[in-house]
Image 1 (cartoon, rainbow, N blue to C red):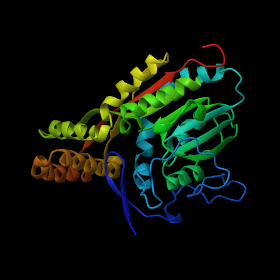
Image 2 (cartoon, one colour):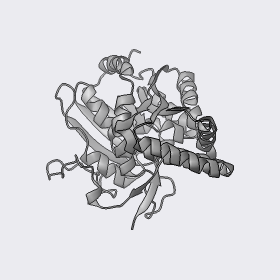
Image 3 (tube, rainbow, N blue to C red):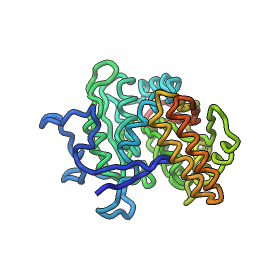
Length: 333
């Protein structure tokens, strides 16, 4: 049976089963199997965050195909400028032999594949997600070595990031997340900030939507679609493009030093597959928010998709990366 799932844009088909593993993910040998990395919680796993009321038949929130499409542009967009202050903080954290990283809402693990090879020293990544199938993807395709060749190990924990606590982050060196803040509520962001600052660990939270999109060539309907999409992002208590401001305030109010850096997608002819899926999701959400747009939006979408296929469309989707340096709890700041 085929299912669908979304992540802010693009309704992407997904089909359960081992053949959906990423093409670059080699089958795990007995020596490389990661405890708890399968689709079900196994004996010995230590969930640190409670699942919301989720039944065994719940569909994945995000399709692996969509996450795989966006991984390259995500990697190109993330801010390298925030890594130097992060490295300095990690090097000066007291009593740390190696780095323990909690990756929240890890999806298929793209954040780990981007960040682990950019940090020195032994690393242990703890991957959190509600979806056990995505946890499996993330675990089998995780990096195995750091920038200096040190070993990188991985474990998985299934749970809801909105219920994170400082105790769950005991011993953590770093909390990371990618494309997560804008699908959280104010209360969930406050909970996240309280957990990170309470545990005294920095947080690198990347690719939060900024609510601004630039399409070339432009169209008179661009602004109206963008405004309707942003309103859709704020439904059901989610913060959408307001999330980055709320997160800055939440961390700052708890004593963290916060740095922001832009991290825009810049999509051209080489990214046509991603652009097409993003367009469908972007316009579809706008129409769901404002049904009166449907007739004009249908024509708009077909024109945009035609330009995309012809290699004539360029899109800039603005995001922001946030680095919050909390005061360490066990030593000097």
